[in-house]
Length: 121
Image 1 (cartoon, rainbow, N blue to C red):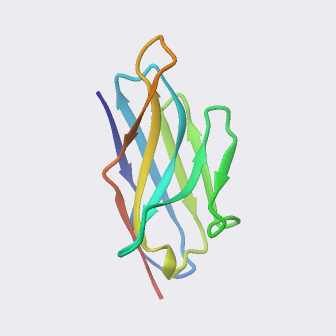
Image 2: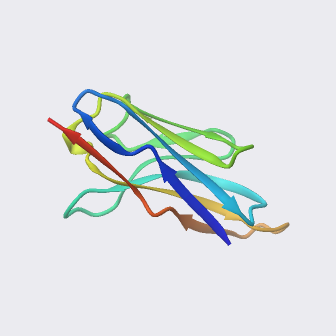
């Protein structure tokens, strides 16, 4: 089995910053894409940012220029540096990872339980 554990959420004032971390552990052979989604109250879950093993990344338009995603392949960890936070960034942030658990090409998607980010105005 594979577990993803997020950390770094909390309460911050508008304009502030937070850094989220998500560490994957368990039966991991390698990890393809990793990234972050978020879900605000009453809204659908949306992609925030994703990053592939080679380092290429993509972002939601709403966070471009403010958030930076990175990963440490040796530690099976993905990070999300969030700067210039806005009240509309308030949400539960979930990390995901496309994990290969053995010497085969098949990947399965795993999710963390989420970490709450609250941005006050």
